[in-house]
Image 1 (tube, rainbow, N blue to C red):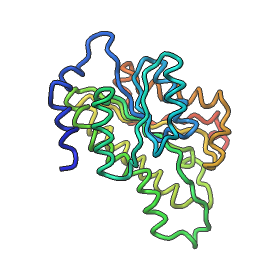
Image 2: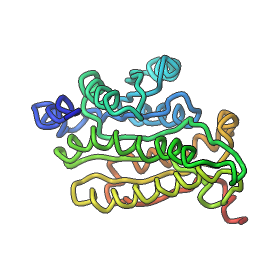
Image 3: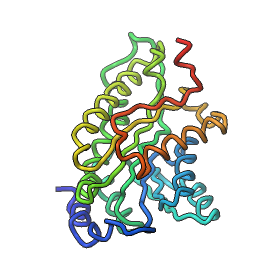
Amino acid sequence: MLYPQVVEVARSGEARRARRGAGARRVALVTGGSGALSRAVARRLARDGLAVAVNELGDSAADVVDAIREAGGIADAFSADVTDERQVAELAAAVADGLGPVEVLVLGAADPQPEAPLAAVAWEDHIAQLELFVKRPVLLGRALLPGMTARRSGRIVQVDAEVLDRSLVGRTAYATARSAQMGLIRSWARALAPLGVTVNTVAPVFLPGDEQADIAAPTRRAFAQAVSFVASEAAGTVTGQRIVVDGGRALAG
């Protein structure tokens, strides 16, 4: 079993202590910390009073952690490959030890969005995208859900993409994986609702990966605010929902 330390945290005094009294901080884990949207979300959740664990490979999350701390928030950076099962288990345990059990999981992304003609898209290309958008939440869910369900309190928020609404030509593997992601979110939402855990997705305006940093600041703020709401304790009856923050582009067809 790869998650003994995580499950032990969920079942031990740490879990009991995590049934918080008034004023105790909730803990959020935000993955994809090098992306502009994930950074905006991490800063917003810290402003909301959460202790924020920012995950990314290497030290690329250090600057957003420093910014949160300079503003008076609590944050730490955790390097891990969240498509690797053992590293995910170690990440979950490290966050629990350093900040406390995770109550909010935000599955952010700063991932490649490959573009190719349909005839050039191989099965391996689909697998690569499924690793990012399906395997990643499955592994993190396995690691964190024991604690959330033990406390009967948890929020899972996955960053989606408006690509599902726009049927972009040339992004077959990406769109397929995003569709599978939505099936996972809705299935989990129904299964976990009786256990006090909500599962939602928030979709920003779609841009190629190398243009994500150019998303206008008002859009980033609106996106982070949407995540903030579904991650909040006030959103306990909101689950299985998809919020699209695209300025109404999907309405134009």
